[in-house]
Image (cartoon, rainbow, N blue to C red):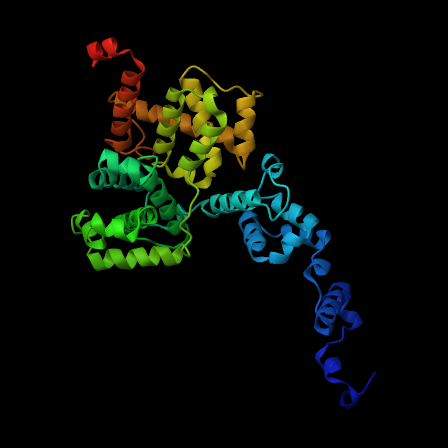
Length: 390
């Protein structure tokens, strides 16, 4: 009831809630008054109850973004446990003793990258594109990769020869989920630019110059359908669209980590089958909506069954797969899709009719693994028998 001319500056700046505004509005104004009068520690404002209400409106990606920006969150153990419960599963939580632990930072960054590049319903954003275009594009990228790098150079470039293709496909799906209406004539330009970004992430600038891996050479391999300037411009556009977040967790990396955890319980042939299935999955757009850890777990389950040593539910190996996957409830669904694409690959190998939406014609991945399987069998035989058969 103080007249306006007799109020202080703080009283004039602080609005007063009327009874008609309701309890929620009055509580909001009381919070604003508290913050304007004195600087309040974030731990006194962000309690467990309010954080739960905030989490109700956030998805996993937003929660991870909030965790990475809110530095004070690490000082509150209860808040940290509440937030970290979403991106990390219970098995990983047991490996972390404190928010400042390096294990937590490593697991957190991996899970953040994994969730960030999970894309769903992105194809509907591009009315001129069909699902069958992407297996063809991926197969062309594999052929380009084999043309640019010999077998020895591919293994030096990455532990897995097709690692850069997995990166390029992740960039491609993420870019397509953000942009709209990419034309059919520009799809190959987006694909080759994503591949250039992937290779530049694995090689230094000096190595790129030594191998002459510049926009001019990439434009040449498109049969000069695009100019070097267009490739350079699209590469910069992709990096900007991805916000320069190019450290991506791929199904290939997840497969290697799971196999290292399983150790000797998985044979060399099982590991080879698992890598084969993972390389087949990058042709299909159905795997873009699944997390890499889930796809890797499904591939290893199918590989173990194909090699005659299945991993059964309830076993120690199966529990390792479940603990590693961020969304273990999706593993059975992924197993069905992996089996389907493997059946299509066997049809192509035997000259049958297969689904072109899942695999391209004359798949370079299948040709590559035909040699890999022969070398694996040859290496497991005794020298006299190997010489007789091969």
